[in-house]
Image 1: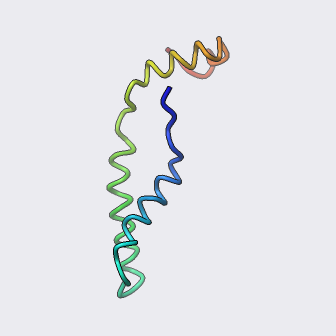
Image 2 (image 1 turned 120 degrees about the vertical axis):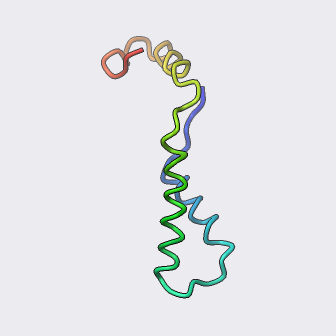
Length: 74
């Protein structure tokens, strides 16, 4: 079963990757623009469908033996 990483941690990792190669920023707005564009790029990847979603749901349903019936539909 594939576990997804924490979205907040992924976002912070992306921000660090964007800013670590830049020496200094001329002003606060240039930093905010860079982070905004990085967030927009990441948002496109976050909205993509999950791979093997149905297989993962079936594995969870077997593992939790009926406790997910009210939560998800297979």
